[in-house]
Amino acid sequence: MTDPSPTEIALEARLSDAARLFSPSAARNRDAIGDLLAGLLPPSARVLEIGSGTGEHAVSVCQRRPDIDWQPSDPDAASRASQNAWAAEAAPNMRPSLDLDLTRPGWAEPLDGVDALVCLNVIHIAPWAVAEAIAAASRTLLTGGGLVYLYGPYLEGDATAPSNIDFDRSLKSRNSQWGVRARSDVEALFAGAGWAAPDRHQMPANNLSLVFRRRSPL
Ligand SMILES: C[S@@+](CC[C@H](N)C(=O)[O-])C[C@H]1O[C@@H](n2cnc3c(N)ncnc32)[C@H](O)[C@@H]1O
Image 1 (cartoon, rainbow, N blue to C red):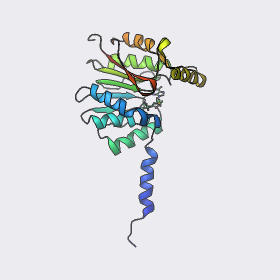
Image 2: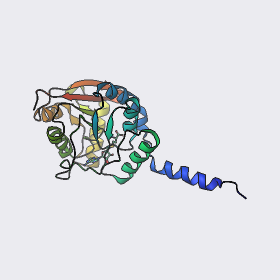
Image 3: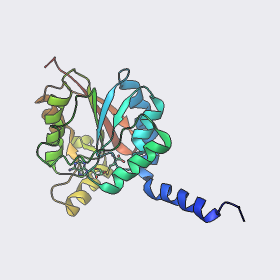
């Protein structure tokens, strides 16, 4: 009896599937984000992503841009395992995920410089201190210029989409430190770190991409 055991093969596949997580919202927005971001990054860009979640956005950009070097991260171990599994499956230009929690002092100190900081769907579902930490790190990690790319929902005064006002209420009811951020607050925060007013791109489901570039060299 030399037939390979179907059970062993199935177990291997299940292990791989168990590590790789699939996000329905990433399935809806990853092409729009991937197309935009892939067109913005400079050749051979070194990218640090904060809060990479399942890793599907990283894969989407890395597949469009095999020349770039993408460092995913997340404080959540299951998310890091998913990012690593996706990298092994589909994106050799993704590095092993780092355990980065931006509320931890000194989180950026061991990191090398990068050409882009990317953060998708995080700053509304984390304390404001996380947005402040990204802005602070943009000073030390992006010394050569580069760009900061933020994706998510924003409050824009009277122009705010009703769905984002509802989302803001729901986030705050879950955690008083969370909430959809005002675009003006985010822009002021990054202006203080030396970034010009961002390019604003309308994205699916009333989300925005904000693309910050240096106002002037550091
Ligand atoms: C809504 S998910 C978004 C995941 C992914 N970026 C996406 O768009 O599908 C929020 C992510 O932020 C991460 N996160 C939460 N608090 C964080 C913190 N303090 N530092 C870094 N990442 C954090 C979570 O672990 C999670 O992966």
